[in-house]
Picture (cartoon, rainbow, N blue to C red):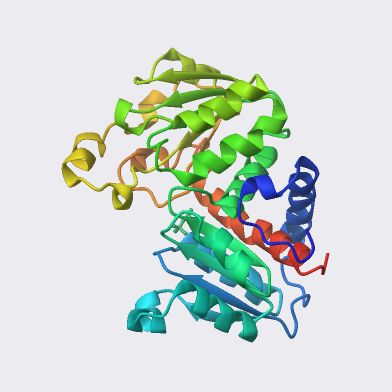
Amino acid sequence: MKNKSLISITDYSKENYLRIIELAAEFEKSPVQNLLNGKVIACLFFEPSTRTRLSFESAINRLGGRVIGFADSGTSSVQKGESLKDTIMTVAKYCDLIIMRHPVEGSARYASEVAKVPVINAGDGANQHPTQCLLDLYSIQKTQGKLNNLNICMIGDLKYGRTVHSLLMAMSYFNPTFHFISPELLKMPDEYKLYLENLGIKYFEHEEFTGFISEADIIYVTRVQKERFSDPIEYEKVKNAYILKNNMLEKTKSNMRILHPLPRVNEIHTDVDENAKAYYFIQALNGVYVRQAIITSILGLK
Ligand code: CP
């Protein structure tokens, strides 16, 4: 992991995932450490973010590092027409590590090829969100006590939701059974289904919530990604396709947990929030410890 960019979840091995989970558990017990003293980390967010940017910044601050960057590229020279390449080559001279979110798929990989420092992909279009995936793995391990042989329901926008794409690939090491629940328009793309088929991993597709959620260990809900639709009428058709409500959880397993990368719009009713099975806000907190683990691993400090 040392000095290696993290662009796709497939850049890491199963052993790497387990190492990050182990380190994150250590940081959860002791989140304030001076490991990043003297280090400067650039957070370049070309797309909006609350959790990813602020949990990275919280992680860095708690480790004694310094953050530079922008939350809105409109305040940078990108606004004057500067290319991504020139931006990255410049910022790389000011820091030890770049964390970048960008709307264009493949942009993070490109940045890692031109930067002289490691790059962490904080989300590139509908493609990948590997640090979210690692915090999802950590959340699953914490709530289920294991990663193997779990029944995972993914609900909502499985087409544009980059977090489900990363999670599906990572979980494929652990013999999961997947249920994909989405409207036709937002089905899991064929490339990911083929990925599972080649590995012999079971998946089932549904358009309706039915009895099978009673078998779920994890229900992973996603927002319909309005920003990825080219046609607003298509978005209107599917925006409220699924709304998870408290009364739908009665027959679910006692240890089942609901995950959501957040932000939520309407897809989980607020009456679920007080249910002990709602885990999404703790999941967001787990992001701090997991990102501490990722940064210190890449910088060779752990
Ligand atoms: N989960 C996630 O990526 O949230 P933000 O868009 O708020 O960073």
